[in-house]
Length: 260
Picture 1 (cartoon, rainbow, N blue to C red):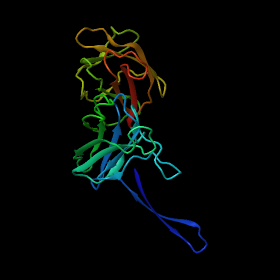
Picture 2 (cartoon, rainbow, N blue to C red):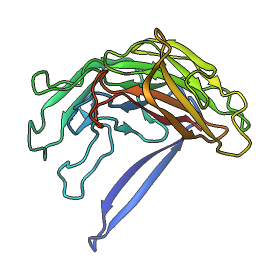
Picture 3 (spheres, rainbow, N blue to C red):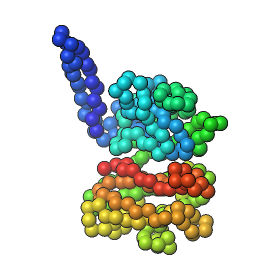
């Protein structure tokens, strides 16, 4: 992981000259803590994240005014983590200033306390509405890196569904196939597993079902098919509102690469 600190100055002719110092970090360097943010608040407006009042997320605009950010199911950074100082930090989020409604409104204000040398993902929760205008409480998950093996695929599952039941994860063509993760309550995560016999190719395709642990029936009605690369670890997560049938807000599953 490389943390770049850019220093810029203008020369006599008005050119922009870059004088950049780079700091090379080893995995888990205790000088920093490593964080990621994932917005799983259905109905969320576009917003950006700040630590102690300093913008942390990287959605930028060439016009000098923020016109991009992270909305429902938006993750920052997409790969890896952002390195920052450990300890108690004020985490806030504000709607972008070019929004047509509630521009610059603060919709998250909480304190996080990441430890030195550790990795975390911070998930928003709840459901955004014109009444509450908040991303909800934060779920903090410490991301403990498994011992990666280039012949294996590593998975974990997090239940982030609004009012979702406990979930079993089933792998196979049918929802009655073998369970690989069992009884994960909303707001909790499984541990890492390595996927048994994942397939012969570098990135084999596997099928998953997400089943109501209490009824043994699919909670997400369609099979979820994913091509996952060996030697990496992936987080699969359930999001959406139980009982909602609109494409944007219904229960569904997504994954992201956690370590590679």
